[in-house]
Length: 173
Image 1 (cartoon, rainbow, N blue to C red):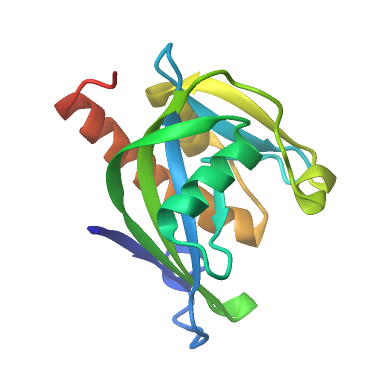
Image 2 (image 1 turned 180 degrees about the vertical axis):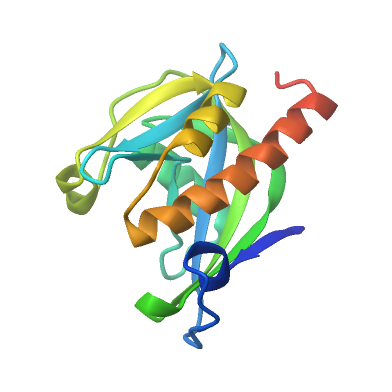
């Protein structure tokens, strides 16, 4: 999969420190509905929005992780349309590294209830659907204080910018 970016402390805090821990593997999906809007998870406790996704579980391949995460965080099944790219993160202050694989997909069937984890419920996570470019603007315009959320914001801006370019080159069915 194409490498889109690496985000380190330098981009977020200005520090040159790096973590050397093995990476967590995760997936995210720019998920389109029939109206052309994309899914956004709104994390109420931290006051930010993000593209749905999460960690790949033991024994799970990336495609199964996409299906599970969309069922949990968007309440639906999906069909993958394209591989968007990989974004690597290195959060030295948390001694944490991550490889995130981004996909473009569309909803298959009906949208239903979310199946959030206890921590996602505790964070007061909800789901909203927004036009792609409006979602990108919303994420770009947020002023974020939370350390972890700053990384999330950076990676989502990169991924959604790539998704805009993909959509301009192809029609989402």
